[in-house]
Image (tube, rainbow, N blue to C red; front, side, top):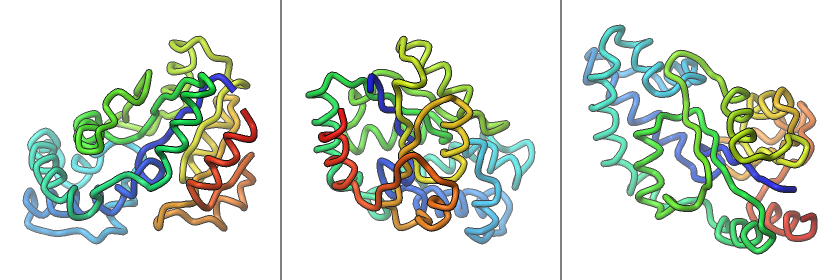
Length: 212
């Protein structure tokens, strides 16, 4: 294994509820109507700009400024820290000389807030963020592997959703499904037969130490 590529929301931290609530409030600010969490989540795939454009066409830029302010304000309350045990995961990867990268569907500005508040700015050797118009993780994964000079069969993607399983397979990578977030659906992930499925960060860390 030469490289491990991580998703962020629901994999590095329990930021999905934070994203949803900040988007709900931003949409309410723009339109006067606060959508349900389900309606917000139904737009996921594109980055947050895509969600805002779906609810307030032509006002996505304005909405992003509002969203980012709310996102930063709520962050210490709704998601004060990354998942426990990740320090051990990254320690194992450093010791083994494995590259770590990040491919996420979220926007660059909101990710910058996460990495700043979590002290993770220098943790990843390459980062790809989301597209406002469409979900394109396979493209971002391929670009990441190319820039790092890593073959797909020598890399692992770690993500918490079924779409992450599809993206990894399309990219020719193995997939480790992260079922440790409260928002993860372990049964649904298992039905799609990921290469590996972990219910805790600790179990993932142990597996890495034994495998690499």
